[in-house]
Amino acid sequence: MGGRRVFVTGLGFVSPHGEDPAAVFERICLGESAIRMVRSGTPEMGTDVLLASIDFEPGDRINKVDRLFMARAAQMAVVATRNALEDSGLMAEGHGPEEAGVFMGCGLGGAEVLQRSYSIYFERRTRRGRPTTVPMIMASGPASQVCMQFGIYGPAHTYSIACASSSVAIGEGFRSIRDGYADVVIAGGAEAMLNDGSVAAWQAVGVIAKEHADGAGASCRPFELERTGLVLGEGAATLILESEQRAAARGADLLAEVVGFGASSDAHKLTEPSVDGQERAMRNALEDAGLPIDVVGYINAHATGTPAGDPVEIEAIKRAFGAAAQAVAVSSTKSMHGHLVGASGALECGITALALHRRRIPPTANLTLPDPACDLDCVAGVGRDAPDLEVALSNSFAFGGSNATLVLRRA
Amino acid sequence: MTPYAFLADVLSEKYDVDPDAISPEATLTELGLDSLTIVELLFDVEDEFGIEVPEERASLETLAEAVALVEELLKAKGD
Picture 1: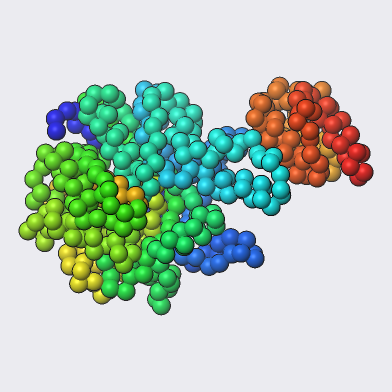
Picture 2 (picture 1 turned 180 degrees about the vertical axis):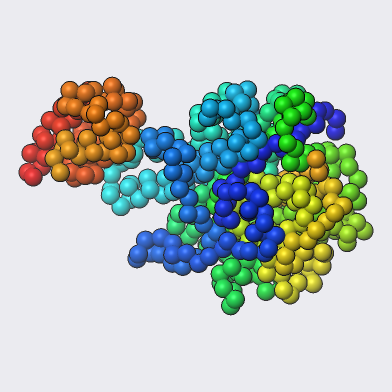
């Protein structure tokens, strides 16, 4: 589809592998897992859970009083955005570009604050909750706080579409620039729902990985015969998107170009993915980009490591790509950073942009015995140089059957 | 810890108020608190002293008023 070209000119992470995108990418390409066994919950109710959690401390990057009104997800979004604005060169005296739009994805918002407010109600048996509860719970907290912290006056939109949240946020932010509604967009996602109430709910779904004999870091095994499930992570990732003209006028460094976005709905089952829906998301995205299928060299797969989910995505890739599927590299970096739910699309889109920039394809960790049902080139072990890499996809497929695919091109 | 010492401590530690600006006569608004943070502060006080501030008593201006209210509620509680 025509319109203005859109470039990624800044990238910021608060991720299980750290905050510096270059260092995060390096560790991921080495196949290093950030997943560990963590004691979760209260002493009497708690349990050991595999998580990709973060020892997050905003320090003086967010002032103390402002933090009183920010849930963990919002704090992570603010720090990731600060990192991205600094990386882009758009931060001046603590302020970002005031005309920017903010497009953020978030699944649960202030999950830990909601848990605390319910525990006050049920355990202390009082209706008197903290007055800061509501503004901290709302899923739009991260977007609003980004505006307030950096003096951003454009529209602030939040997309809450489970695991596809931040891919849709980036896709819609991309379109708003392409279609002329904005020149610069702060796009990304944040999720911090590793509070034990949320973790217990996820365990009840029956999709959480079991600890592997080789240790916690070996437990998330997308495309592998012995895979047992996903591992929850937390964090935030922000991309600065700019129109070609704006980026050129200030001589910005270009990390990658966003060239397409496609979405679709399965209209099938809440937690059971559909080949058809995923295939349509990829086809729609490539059609949006106006690119032929055979230019795609890499797909950062949604693949979470569940027995049911991974083969569906592989089948969808085969149907969307036809014979070209055999030539495309597919990897799941969730094998190392876990599933960041509402932030996963943004983190993986950032990793995909780095892959294009460095022409290096990140691997799928723990892929020692490939599942015959996942028989594409799934880049086992460590990263791989890809000197001809030009175009890559980033897939995010959500519970509820909401599918999103982003198409990026080397800048 | 006395109610005043506790309030002074929380104001400087949690709400980042300049310790030199804290005095019994200082109004909470002058110290930079808004309606939401004043209620949040009252919750800190309730948690610390095991009291409940009645809603109709929650509109406080100065630190001295806050201290007087806490002392009154502590006395009523029998501490």
